Amino acid sequence: MNNGPSAAYIHELSAFLAAIRSGLDFLAVAAARTMSGTVAHSMHTLEKMVDKGQQSGILEVVKTHQEWLAELRDYRDEVVHRQVVQAPAAGWLVSMKGKTSKAIMPIVVPRRRRSAPGYQTVADDK
Image (cartoon, rainbow, N blue to C red; front, side, top):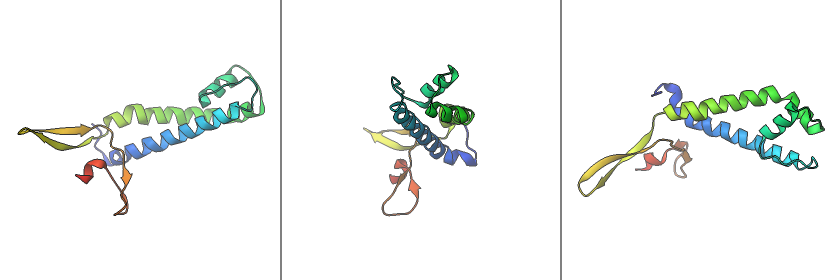
């Protein structure tokens, strides 16, 4: 299990990278609508069009930034699919009919608390 100093931030980094990728996918869908006959659900669709040698103004932009887009995707996949799984989980004790067990939340999503600055996890409320 990854318990180093960076483990505390792995969920935030994962969410940040997922938001960037979602934003790029949103832009790809919007850009594809300006290209007759093109339907895209992600940036990957436009990248595949570039790989096939198709051309347009939008695909030129994608081609120019294709290396960066691939690096971002690879980095995000590493963090989301490999690092978050290893990050420490949080949870709380649950008691029922005299038996106690710990309920584990494998991915803790931080949220802003109205009464105090900073972030806390749902488990911190208990």
